[in-house]
Image (cartoon, rainbow, N blue to C red; front, side):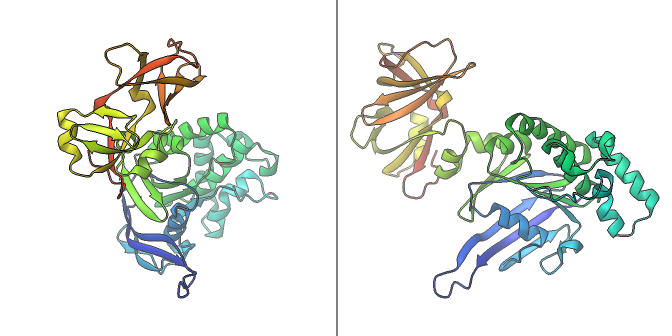
Length: 365
């Protein structure tokens, strides 16, 4: 096992001399602790896979330092970095048995046969694939193919596991099962793991910490709960959560937040006023579960609007409420039975409000 450290790591594709270069990763500082499960999360093109490939040695950093343990690895070939890489596409040898696929990297290193057999047996038991060691991977369902790919990585006993969207090609039910299995596996083995995904459910449910990236820039590194409850930037606030966070650009009017057309007007408590500072243009954010739908005449109604859409989801209901020229989403228990066209009130949980500087996108409360 080992720590991974990235210091001011930048990756530029193309010369950029004529403005045609692409800055994929910009001065990335990231520390991954020994035995940590860290997820790189972001939309397509944010630089997360490029970062993983630079750690693996499949891409060369334009500048900056990459260290695995106490060794600088920028100039080391991938095979010299003591890492294992699991790809989105499993890259198994179709003409070899499962046993031979798993043992291939060990045989390539000319490890004694007894040790190879011992490692293959141990890994196959842990992954519950001992009964298919004689079969060929092209005859296996995708979930078992993924286990074989994991087994081939694990059998090497690397310092660091790198995984690039390994669950993307699985169906929803199998993805959910594999999320649990991967989490258990990492806890048992204790190996440092960097995992790339665009799926926030994978990131929130599996990781010790999440590193959110956008346009090559690291936005926030924190625990899943802090990423969700205390997003540092407006991008993180909008990217994390389903449904996405409600956001509305506002201005300060004494102790009120006022929407652009004055249709939105929300009183701030003293603590929020003090923490919000002096920006005149703010973005108000509130998650759907922190908005209660109440009767329009209720005292606790901060805002009033008309239900536009009702989405019953079994264990919860999501309402889209029209407040003149903007809409807010509210997530409620299924017992709430308002219907489209009803005039309702919305009660905002002041303790769960998020305020961002409209210019910089940085959190201010």
